Length: 147
Length: 422
Image (cartoon, rainbow over all chains, first blue to last red; front, side, top):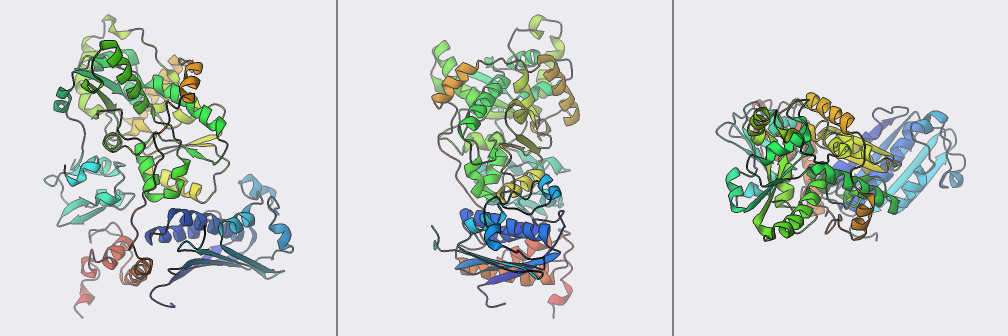
């Protein structure tokens, strides 16, 4: 642990596990509520982390969500060992989705995942290697850096 | 006023034996057992009534209006929740129940179901005019409103800004009666006959207006005997059919699903019970339910008929209500044009929006709060994870939190006694 005034935890996410899907995101936001973080920021983290977690559940075999909070910022890094995203630019377009018919039937795959993460993050980076996996890094500033 | 006056629940320390039942069931972890008695941390309580429901010793008591409190009103009006229609058997009509309630000491009685129907029409109007955000959440259950303010503060903006039927009915009644009988509005006492104690809080401390239109709430339990006696006594008299209009649509509001069923053209879902409500609100917070237009949430299992201050078994109550819906059908008893006009005049709207009131964090200072969180996690490693409750906290995680905040000590854990002497 870096110091007393930063907190971090790494959650593991299992691909295809729709029963526990969303639990890491839920724990993250409960932690933030305990820290007294402003509701609006909690909401943004909730949406961004949930979408990122669901991406792993839907498209990868396994992954991790590393959650860090300092007095100045919240950072969430989601890594997976999936097939990778061949065209990131296209994946970032609202409405673009490679979800299967089954996923859509479950209400997922509207093609809003990545755009929603970007919308709610202050800084968002995504990198992907074909055949190896994808890394998303979401930063949300505290202390009114945003708005 | 005592410090729990913001709430509708208190613990009778003479009856409490310090078991852990209420503490274990409390969804917001507001209860601790200290010195062999349950104590409510009121700033964490949302008045859901789970403790009242589970206590085997009747030591959790509702704080409600007493009949002596009614003496100060020259004109007394009963506003029974439609739940009342499910409480006195399958063959007693709403009209008979209203008459019986009226005859136990009220000058007037009003069918809240009629107002439920008006409110559903205005909810439809609101949903029509406001296409986003979604889902819009019902305002009917005062505990759900409080739960959102406390646990899901960012969802306050989704609560429909329309007052629930009980408030609107009271607003109407006060005006009508004052005019009709030429008496001052404040000499009229309008009392809700309620299935839960939480209404008492929304009456004393309304979240969306300066002052509630209601003057008090009396539990169904409290009037049950008297009303039942009246019904039995007068069963053959003409009072069985008083020709009052009865709204089948409104009666349905007493059960989970009634409100959303009345919104015909909207994709809505209905959730009841405190844990399922928390679960669904978590989903809303994740942005998962944007396809749903309207979300009806009721804290009591199966809705208001499952309220802790009702008498009838809730499954029988459900069957009774279903029967009434079959009889009174879905025939509209309310004039839609009147509702539209009132809606335009903003008659049903909140005076002000529901304010977020999140539970306080570990510390006001963010660095300090993070220190507490790290301390808590360190303490967690020393606890057995059995969640037994013997320490007086509902589970190990909450004990760790209490210790980190200096409100408990590691010695409170019965599994840790040994290594503390080292």
